[in-house]
Image (cartoon, rainbow, N blue to C red; front, side, top):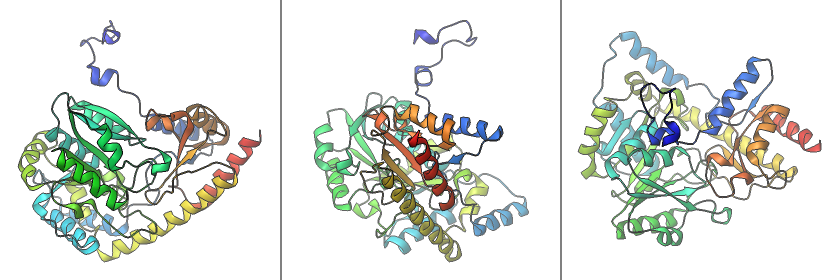
Length: 396
């Protein structure tokens, strides 16, 4: 802590949770890429998990109709009742699940949903199991409430997903629960439903919490639609309008929580956020329309084509992607044949080839220098150009 005590801080020391937080390297790489673009360089963006498609037209029209009326006030802390009902209907129509809309909490992005759930569940010193590699912000969300993130190492042979045996071995006296993601960022892999059921049974046995990140739900390829909510009411599911629904900048997500937790999380939401964005909520009412779903399914097929193009191109250059990416829009590539430090290689890719990608250091501590995440959130022509640039770089 003492390293933050200096004369340049007129208001005193920076709190430890802020002062010692690791940077989100992908955001810094993106800033560098944008700076190079501003200087006239042609940069192929494969670093950030943001669909390159525009917000769907039906969603834009719904937002415009709402804004034209000129009445933009707060909504209830848990979201517009009509939107909560629309989300429940989506679970019924797409997954065959009957979810009480009262259990659905509309939030300021999926990050807001996870923050609220962790705030409700975490006491100081509680330990949360987090798969490594995994989404980096989750570690810091746990720390924000005095919790302790514990890395649960998962291998390519496990499809970078935990299984019941590894969770049982890692579970300790102070373990509060586990956060899993299916499809996963950064690997795009899925948890087999039967395996997630076994992990769920273990958390029940240990009186712990299972939190399932489903923000890439809908973006799966060759897999039947499925939700962890099929396992019962005693788990927490996080979802988002950002990825499948293509509404990243609208900052809107939701959580589905067990019935007994709704009121306490509502109180937290009242104080932390007041409510999610009102225009975004009214826009999202159109997200589930048949017209919009048809457009999103067309986009999903385009993502599949992009995945297959990138995967084939990487393998042709002897760059291995050892775990099959069945969802999201990422490939987690093993670049150990090329380099020993993927962080340095990512900067070389950007500086010399004009390709922005994300090094493994963002996603965990187990052999991070071996891995590089490539997002296929750009069109096939640009992916093919990126592959050609990589080939030229490797020939040097």
